Picture 1 (cartoon, chains in turn orange, red):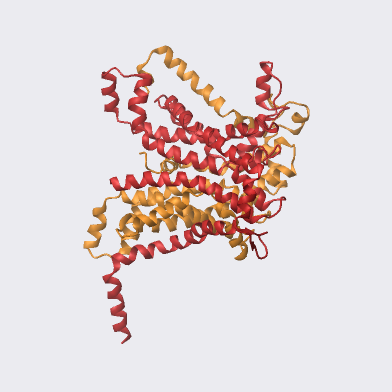
Picture 2 (cartoon, helix red, strand yellow):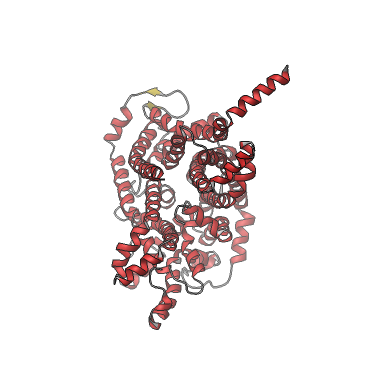
Length: 282
Length: 303
């Protein structure tokens, strides 16, 4: 193990390390702690110039209550859910199939198709902006959740295919051969042999895509406009315009917007990290 | 009769099952991807030769958009900022490695520490941008409170053309460093302990151990960190849009933001010009994409 395990070093260094950890963490998360602090302060603190001292009173319930009851925030959150969940399902389903095809079968264009997906995934999405917006307009899906979902599914399929294919490649191929000898149809091999083995990959991709899509801002701005379809990342800018300089409410709003992916991360940490590292560094 | 047709059909499928199945499985994915990703890339090339407001019919203007780009000072500012982004964003890689080395211990609660250090990556860039806007605020921001202790005057980081890009990049480095950290933490787990012991017996330690034994073994993690950091740097949009909206005086624009501004904002709906900017960005990216794909291809052949 590198660096040298702390248990093997001197007592002084052990103690220094143990006390350094929380200090480093607080410094690292300082900007976030500040926002959390802001979100439980009463409005009066800000007009009195009390920005960084402890809140004069706990106003968390009031602030968060106003975010949920008086603003469009719940609507935006709901939109985000209705955009994110279908995208996750769609992208995972499509890429389970493409990954299966590219991971199991040997055919001439295999590598070419695979690299098409990988290359497309690296493309800066600005080059897609004008055509995709036009496409969405022409299909009558501009400013709808469906329009956003369809695009997200298509784009994420690139990354997901990369992931799924590499995962399937690492599965024991003898299983498939054994199934073939038994005369099992290919689609049944997919459904009954490969898919159950792909559960960890599916979990990893699901959390990862959830976070990516929940946090997407660019496409939300390009393809949607109003409160009826905008997700929370785009909604928060209108929210902030509405509560300009009301720092306590803006902070509470930001925290509300940030919580779902954070919760997802903490609940499914292992899968999340497996996904991030593309399964390549084990 | 019909039964016979059915039978021959099935046997034809059966005979070619292995050749056909992959394509049946690929079709939905490929169609979606072609429709929404691959074709639009080419469409953008075409649109960049048009004068088009996005509504009616565009008129072809040949390379006029590119000629205009050549003489556009805002384009050069964006391009310069893109290069600064690219160069400084790569600092996330050594920074991430440093934090990973710091956290790669087995004391109690270290798992929680690791997750909390990773936090910035999980939250949306929109929130990161907002948080850092306040952090830099000239009247109450923590940064100015802090440098005030040392007797330095307030700096309006986001209002100053010299500092603005660096200020935004610093905000971007925060989540990106967290990402690189997690890649390296996973990588460090896989480092071969026997090699470390062997190197220790040979008297290697500290920096030499890190440089000659550890870092070579972290190569896969470094490659992924490099790929995601370059892509992240060239895609930077959210932070700029949230923190400065390209200002002051357009000094914090990058190509991706400038193209958005040209094509979809009050500056007018100049789709052709925006597409031309996107094409330039794409060509820069293409150098990297080629390198990434080439590396991956070599890897594939190796198997």
